[in-house]
Length: 423
Ligand SMILES: Cc1ncc(COP(=O)(O)O)c(C=O)c1O
Image 1 (cartoon, protein in one colour):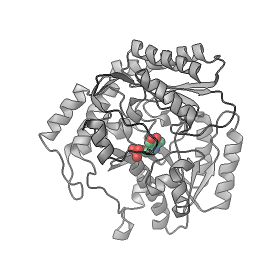
Image 2: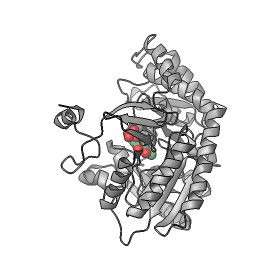
Image 3: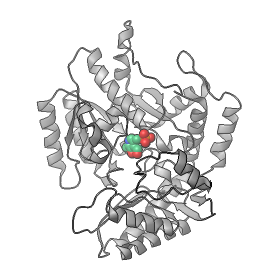
Image 4: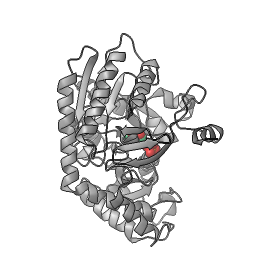
């Protein structure tokens, strides 16, 4: 049996209907923005492997840091123990984050980063003997697949089987251009009608919804409303963090700052699964007590894994280099040029760019579904042409590793342009 046949026998893949899905492609090697399959076919990874890999596959600098850590201290439990990579990473990250962020809590993936933030929002009020249990989230949000993260997510495909088993979430419209006032009103109404504990949002870009973008001023207004009513705010920067929007964090575009920030994906440069939730001192203090019941009883076996911390420290070093910052600017310039070239195409209804993120919507006569025929046709065309892009319904987005070359980017744009001819 070859790899794909053995995969079929043993494995269950994410977000996959195995009866109808094509067999997975077996990847054997990665370097820079490129991946190769078992038949040596080359692919450009134009979505940075689900947005985790800004600095390229098999990055030597990060790999060396991981190797050094693996051969010094690969892992130690974080309950009752600590270690240098965790302390250094916390110190370094807090210096980069908005200055109201004072405490770091480690976990393993974006969903757990969100899960912890929501639990802290709920327990903060519980510890203060205040009855606030409802969370506010945006329509079409995506915050992950664990239960609280799922409750906050608004894409029904992911959550419909569990609808009656989730914590209370009120959904408000995203303040996209022209809809800002509707969103503000909905937030005020929700706060008036429910005992709201917190508001969670993907700052400036809703990734899984199809790179839906909205302005910092609108988010500032929503944060101000929350602040006026003592509602805790959670910025889910799992996708947007570490340069994707052109600034280190999407929150860097804001005037006001959230109470909590969730990080994962690019945190370790796409090498080792790791996540972080960050908190204000006030939140930490609400759990600081002589009463053990007020502690945060949440943890994972691999919390603050030293190897993951070493990978994250090396990634932050790479991100800070002038070369990498120039790459972010270069990709943004190239995206904007492509936007100029494509925005008047008869099959394109809208385009948008922020940082290294580009998205276009294809005109359709009727609503299309998330994993529908149009999406499948486009996906197959991209794969045939050696470009990994995963359209969302009628939305094609590009979110490449920052180190992608101009020639590779040009190939991605060309394939997207050609795809418009087949739809
Ligand atoms: C904004 C956001 N939050 C949370 C998650 C969940 O992260 P993970 O898949 O690592 O659990 C994702 C994943 O795409 C995401 O985009």
